[in-house]
Length: 241
Image (cartoon, rainbow, N blue to C red; front, top):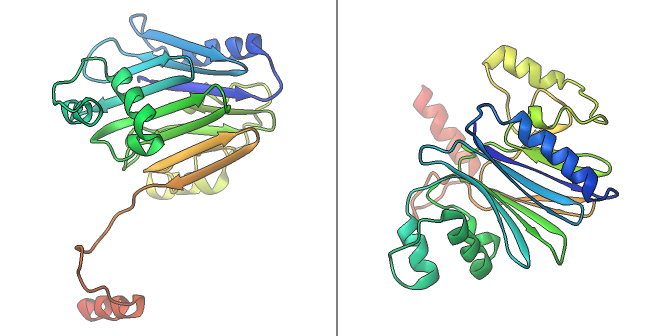
């Protein structure tokens, strides 16, 4: 599968980051024709694995201030281009278009786009990483917040090989899998690896990690009368009767 990988190392130099990133992207390169790309900056790196066919794009680009990684598909690129340039005919280079949107609107500009995607932005000056995914979390991203590093990847086999990763199984997640056929919430089969929830902005700075939700389901129309929780429960019980 195409995707992104990356890490922030708090006490290691670029040589270790290069070694780690090389291993991560190679683990996700399933075919010889896949295209790999990597960018490194001051103890941090982002890599991409692109299928080199179809409509999905996985790419890492860079300017003086930012490293920008993107993996996914956006359906209304002309409308997005109009937000930046004022006209509706956009360039074919999707990652550069999205980077322009980030420069103009910040992380919020990449929230709720019409597509399946995950984007990672590293600010070289502030050393802040932001990761944004689509509303429904269709483009999965896993992360591990270790004591001296933060690691993320589209498949968690690119994470669990690290020498200091404990590989401890999450028993509750395993019970989910045996009972329902899938794992609930942000759990994975490894206790220390989490799944980025849908419609999220993850922010990593130094040893601090925060996740904020930018969108959620709404089951009522704007302006519609909203009942209390007890009233909804009573109405549901009446329907069951």
